[in-house]
Amino acid sequence: MENSIYTDFERTLAFHSAPAMLGLKPANLISLAVGDEELEENIRRFNLRAASKGLEIRRLCGVNGRQLLLVYNLRLMERQLEDPDIQKLFKVFGYAGCKKTEDYLAKLSGRIADSGNFPHEIGLFLGYPVEDVKGFIANKGENYLICGYWKVYSDEQRARRIFTSYNRCRSYILSRLDKGEDIYKALRIS
Image 1 (cartoon, rainbow, N blue to C red):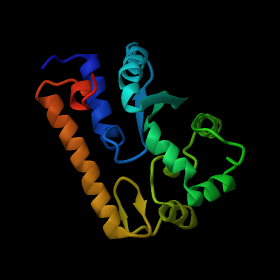
Image 2: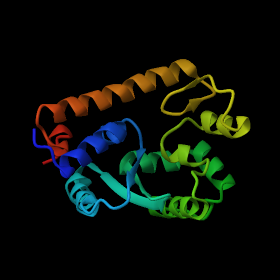
Image 3: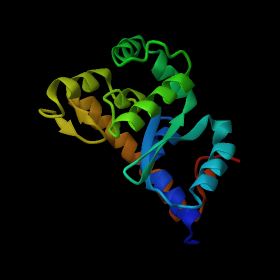
Image 4: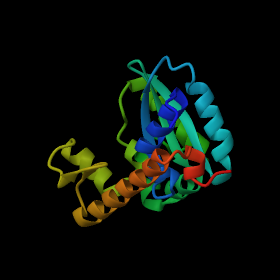
């Protein structure tokens, strides 16, 4: 298999965002070092080709010499943002004026850029259960039941099943790349 920056980008994308790309969660975050000249081209190429599947990479901000990217499934993100329980929590975090997905993502980008940290609501964008986001806040990140893709405070068994399915997504796409396919063929994008 050809070893190039483009291939490295695809492997990074597959490793960190397979569940979102395969439709199991609304979004995943990727942090990449600033200075990759081909990053812009890779993002542009992915967004053009993956738009037919409702997938997009959005640059959230630059923090501490790294670019923070959100890989998201638009359909799942929209569904996530419409959930009444999630809406209540978003209002607490100052998102009351947001109407469209773009409004929410722009607000999130600004909050990360302003603070240089991850605001608590990032978990809502990433599909974490509301109870676990609330538990994280109430416990200041301590006293969790298990820690995997997120810190779990509510339904440990459900979280374990979800973690297993996310691991399967990652293994599936990485195995396809190992067989010489590119990310688009692995995702069945023409």
